[in-house]
Image (cartoon, rainbow, N blue to C red):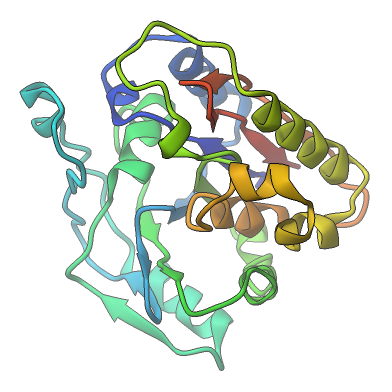
Length: 255
C-alpha cells in the first residue's frame, strides 16, 4: 500500500470543487483500495500518545467562522479498534492511549470525503504528541511500516508550508511568497535526493524554514509519511500549488 501526505488547506475545501479537491478525487482510482486508513492530522496535536479506538468515530468540526453548511457535513466512516490496538502494539514501548473521546477532525475528513466519498473504509486517527521532537516523531513513524503490507493506508494531513500570519484572508488570489516557494522547492529536492535527515531537521534550513514552519503541527504529518519510504522507493507529488500565498497544498505519495 502506498503512503500519502496531503496539504489540506482551508476547511472549505470540503465543500468546493477546485484544482486541489479535483486532484484529491483523482487519487481514488490511483490508489489500491485500503483495508483501513491510519490518519495523522495536524489538528490532533496533544501531549502524550493516543489513537482513536471508537467503532463509530464522530465527525469533529474543529474550526469557527465558516458557513453553516460546513458544520452540517458528516463523514460517517467506521473506526477500527483492531487497527488501533495494532498501532499501539507497534509503537511499544512508547505509551499510546486508546482514546474514544476524539473522532475524525477536519484534517482527516475534509480530504477523505473527496478520495473515499462513500465513507466505507475504516479510519483510525493517531495523535501527534507535542512533547516529542521531529526526530522522535520520524523514528516513531518508522515502526508503522509493516502496516503497509497489511493493506493499511498511512495518511498524513497537514501543510508543508503553513504560515497563517502571512495568509491573504478573504482577499483575491495572490502569488505565493518567495520564501514559501523556496522552502517548498528545497523540500522537494531533499525528498527526491532521499536526504530525509535534512527534511526531519527542518529547523536547520534557515530563515525560509522559520517562516514556512513557524509551528510544527502541520509539518509533522509529512514526516509520518516519509518515514514509510523504503530504499529507492518512488515518490511523486500528485497535488501542487499554494493557497493564500503562504499555505502549500503539496501532496506527497510514497510508493
